[in-house]
Image (tube, rainbow, N blue to C red; front, side, top):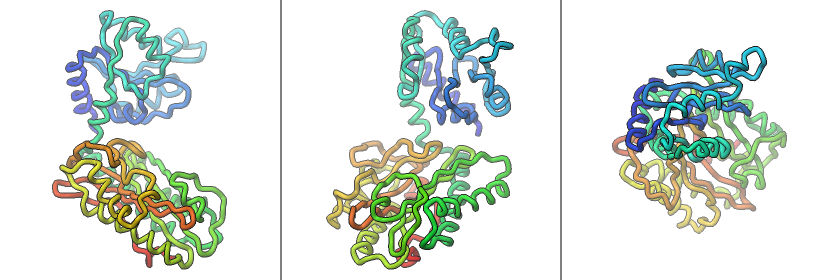
Length: 377
């Protein structure tokens, strides 16, 4: 991705807020401004931006990775082995140097939701003022560029194929983890063929049965699927950082009449949102498209989460489609549309598809069977 325009816009915001130095610490935001997808455990990594340069402060074990992939002006490396520790043994070695270039009392931009408390106090105790840039970055990420959308479309194609592969092989007696692996195997085969050298992220869960499908987020385990039960299969694929999501509820054997009715309400709610979401409405109004269908059926109390969320670099990201969000939606925003219904004696029901908002509505970038009779195995 060309990150130079993003950096230019960040610098404009820094000038507006009179910020002398910006520290980017959230891993998705680091990638957004540098193309550097860091693996972060216990060692601090920072992307810094000032008026003259963009820098990556990294530990020694990330040196080659950062120099090969980070779109920055300089890579500053701190070491934790005696042969090179004199060149800097902590990220603070380089941070101190940058702070020393600022006048006392200068403003330092940080993501308030990402900066460690210790680092925040360390900077403040030296007389600098912290200012939030996280909200600005969040808003920048709302609207996807043509290049970002193209990558999400590729992820959408992969995740749709993986969903189809899993559904083709499901049967009583396979485990939830088997279900995950059916689609994962296709992704692992297709990605190097279609996108050699690409990075890949996979998130998947496949709970089965009344109790486990009622948990909207639960990891797959070794439980075997039984005859005549409900399954909720959820997938995300990230290709070079950009994600798409698809989810399907299906049945092994004949669903009960009550399950058929709840499934009908769920799919009607999702289709109403897919048909109706568009730029100019608020996020709360988009949520209401699906929620009203569920409430009209008398099932509102069983729909216990928002009806959709932003998706892109993050599995879940702003904007969130929830009842009290007054944000006005814009062309180029991307969402997972996923109204859900969870009834203890019947199971959990949720379909999800990824859409890009267009000038007159939305375009779905995930495709798979969705009607009840297609999803009885």
